[in-house]
Length: 124
Image (cartoon, rainbow, N blue to C red; front, side, top):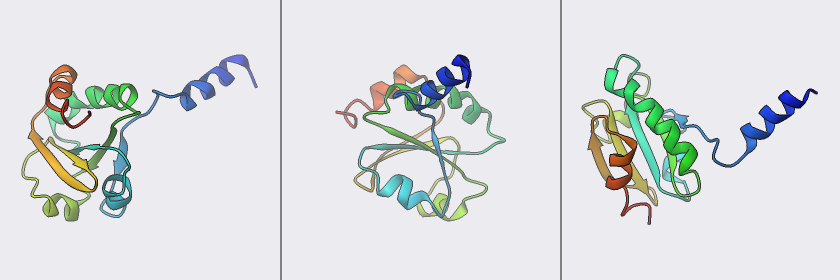
């Protein structure tokens, strides 16, 4: 194995290199409700422009906040059961779950700074 390949593998396993987890109706309970830390869930769609804007923000948050926040995305078009169960009517909708319960809901794209400010009481 080359040094470059070894470096890429190590970086992929290193703390802080997390990416948002893609959940489905079938995996939502395991990924979100049973999590041992707060979970930020983005209800998204491939056709949603603001959702695409939010993607890099959530990727950075998944990396930078990996120790205290799990970031999950769920496609509303392919996962209608969870979308309906939580009353999601707009995309992107961001919901924060703690101990299996939704504790905050926000609609629309926002900057990482603003999102962190809005989540400050949940992440403490």
